[in-house]
Length: 568
Image (cartoon, rainbow, N blue to C red; front, side, top):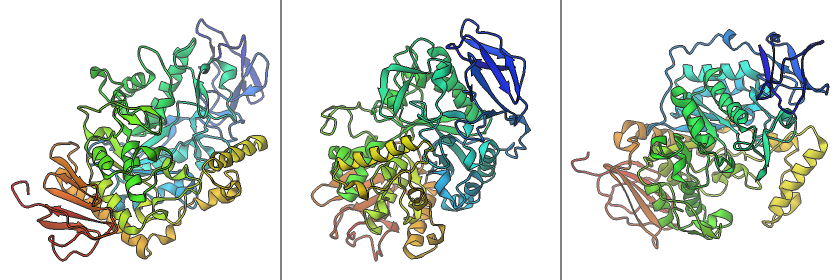
């Protein structure tokens, strides 16, 4: 049985190859149905009121791009080999690795990413997070302008390619998280508004029309989103979903769509939200009045860490910059917890009282914080190797769930730029001009901002795997591996609890010590050696050569010490 929700149409024809079949309907909710089912791989679409044939809003495969016809997929026919996989929880021992399929490997495909998974196993991560993989316009892009939410991107390898990648990951003990975008859809190939009220003009987002989660017809829109989430978990065996920019999901319903998603997903997987609201309700349990999302990205931790190690204070970094801010982030994730934000010019946030650290992800880099810079600079292009090691120690030995961005572990020399491949020349021009205008406001010359539509911008962002084993790259890779091993080996560092955590610092001397159980992570952010009190004990790791724990901590360096005593 083929069905489609199209309340804006009086009649709908199912078009299968050369056949045109009138569908029954609409029913009282606006659904049309037909007993005719396209065969797997057979092109099909829908004609609304005799108009042009449109792709299925729930198309499982778009091999001819966002404007082409849909194809059916036999999900039951894939030869999965992960029958013994039981998933993994998101807990204190988890380490997440975010990657973009198009630039992670030379091939830029699901199979190309699968061929590099052994590197991730050797690194020690156990969760792979994929930037959006549903169909988006053109051959390459970040994926946040996707339109066919159920269809894995054809240029990456389509449905079977994604299944092979997930199957390969599970065979290596790696969980897979898929980034999904429910706050807006891209402009090119977006035919949903022809079918029904998927969007509303009552709200606006920075990226396009807001999705209709609380107006007339919203029940079916909400079901569309919930079904999409479940399809990634069930049809593609994903272990979790990352929900993009939930602060741009506008919903005044008594049951917020995030809560509905969390309830529907249940034990099928875990949900991680991106939110800049600093609102603990996002991750608080539903029984306690929250939405029940399992975890969220902690931009406050990133901003506090980045501002300290780089000295940047522009834009949203104006709210950060002191060692004390970083100390607060380590203690509770939110720096802005109800106080005044100079950047926003208003109070922002609320204290995350009672929440475990596993409710938050911590990172020095991610696709946004790198790619939304004009030149796509990684942290390794802003600070030296010593400061990179300090930051890595706080991310990987801190209380939160660590996240690394592709290539971060070896200080990849390639940037991660913003790139698109819009086939519509006018849309491509608008994107390029908009990007240049955006950074011109920050003092950049327009000609210096890479053109998102240029193939060179995409190609420059591909990782160079030849440098992994070279000199300083290899040294930083070994440092990350050692930190992850230490985190996993020591219960105090992977407890997923704030118990035993303390932070002390000296703002003037620019040092900070994170204490977790018997371990002290002593960080010197200054350019001068510092004598940091209370570091007696066994030096477990150090980013500099250390003759003894009583020596000065060198400039821009970190020392991990196991303190003597009953906790040892």
